[in-house]
Image 1 (cartoon, rainbow, N blue to C red):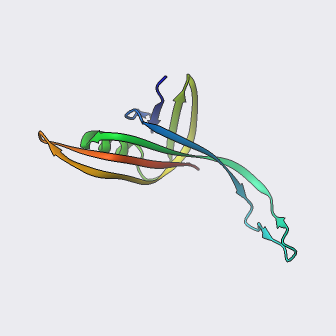
Image 2 (tube, rainbow, N blue to C red):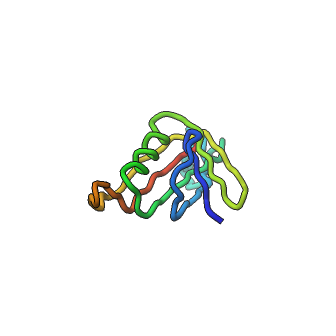
Image 3 (spheres, helix red, strand yellow):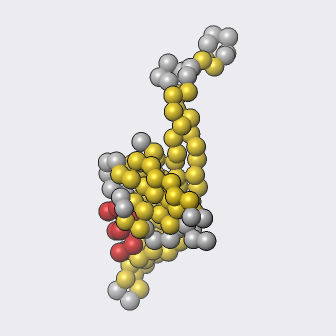
Length: 117
C-alpha cells in the first residue's frame, strides 16, 4: 500500500521512503552528575520524519516547498490506512538538479525532515 503524505492539507508526491523517529525531549537542567549519573526529567516525546523522493519535476518540488513552508503547519502521514497528524516545522529541503529535458527541470535525491513542534 502506498504512503500518503500531506503538508498543510496538500497531498504531496508519493515518497520512496519515510523514516520515523520517536525522540524524547529532556528538561533544560538535564546532564550528568559528578559521579557520572544521568539526571533530568523526560518532558515529552516528539516525532521526526525524514521523507525521501526519487525523481521530481520542478512543479512537484515547488509544491513540496510551498506546502512545507517556514513556520508551523499540520503534517499528516497515512500508512496502511492509519493516519498520524502532528503540528510541525520543516528542516532543510534538499535535492540535486538532474537537468532540463523537454523544457522540464528534474530533481533527484529530494528529501526533507519534518519535526513535531
